[in-house]
Structures are given as C-alpha cells and as structure tokens.
Length: 262
Image (cartoon, helix red, strand yellow):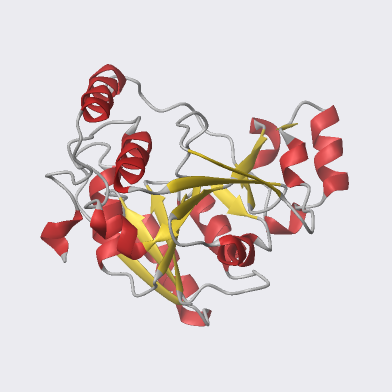
C-alpha cells in the first residue's frame, strides 16, 4: 500500500530539515513526502531543493502565500497532490522514530484512523536533536536534566497497547494517519479554521460522524516534538466555537474543504 507523508511547515527550515531526514531514514520508506508550506520565506524552498537532489523518495513542495495561520488550507492542497492511498500527517517540529512509517502501516485498518504519541523535548536540546539521538538511554539522561517528558512513549514493544474509541482528548495531527478516501469523504480539513487551534479536533469529530473509530497506539509510532515558542491563541476562542457548532450538527461533510482542489 502506497503511503504519503504530509508535513506542515512555516518558517522553520532547520526543524523541517531534521524531520524530513527522519523520514528518509525509516526502516520502511514512505512512497512520497509532501511539504505543506503555509507561506514560508525562500529559505525553506532552498533547503527542500537541496534535499531533493539526493533523495530516493519523491519530495513535493506545496506553497501558498502567507496570510496568517492557514494550516487547514495548505494541508488540503498537499493531500490533493498526494498519490498514496494511506496518509500520515505531521508537523515540521516532530521527528519520527525509525519505525514510525512501518508502525502506522502495520496497524492501518479500514474503518479507523490512527493516533500516535510523542516525546516532548526541552528548549536546550531541541536545536541539536536529530533522529540519530533517538535512544532510550539518551532520553533517560535528557529526562533527568528536565529536557524530555513522556519518555515512556518512546518504548517500542512488539505488541503495543491499542485502544479503540471515539474520544477527542489527546487528538494531535502531529502524528496521525488515515486512508485518503476517508479524508476525502468528509471533505478534508475545514478551511473555516484560521489561526492556531482545534482544526484537527474538528476533523476527527467529522470522522466519527462518518463512522470511523480512533485507534490509539501506545509504545509504537512515536515522534519527538522539538521545543518552540507557543503559537498565538488569538483565534482559539473563535475556533472552539466552530468546533462546538460542528459537534451539534449531523453532517460529516464540511462546506469549505478539499473538494475545490480535486
């Protein structure tokens, strides 16, 4: 089954480079990597061009003009250009564990989407941390110094802990996967969401209305979240109101979604 990685980014070419490198050093390569660029300056484009020169994996760069935080829109545009039947979505600040692609693919199941987990890295180590630093011993040392949280998520067990539910708590699109056909069926991300917050939860609400379950996987499919300053919360109140409105509705198909790009 072909698999596409969708990485959202905005003006963090240093972090993005490390995340792409993590996907280029998987024990099961993705079939393509698509960068969903929410209006970065030319530094990001130049970095991607350099990686493309030597990459054995197809890398596409999808960009639109910077008009504020529009992650929902640029992700829809990126998915519309994807060729994989199965999609993993993540952010430029989330370095994948070496088995992340294989783990998501192994547990992919029709009627479900997958929610993975993450280790949170501190500000003092994030700048230099790469996929080569992923080991339990190093993470333990970082944890003792207060530079790594949730390190139990880094455990990779032969039989992971799997919970199937329709909960919203803990939804994070920095490590989520689903079938492309399911994403298109609900019309993708709702582009009414602008500014940081809740666009991923709203997508999941519509997934549930469509009939999907959440497959929560622990001790497998882990990523490593690099520290950065918090996003502006100026749009959060508005976005929560949008989420609550959708929760009360019956329809799973959003009006302002991916269909315009297909």
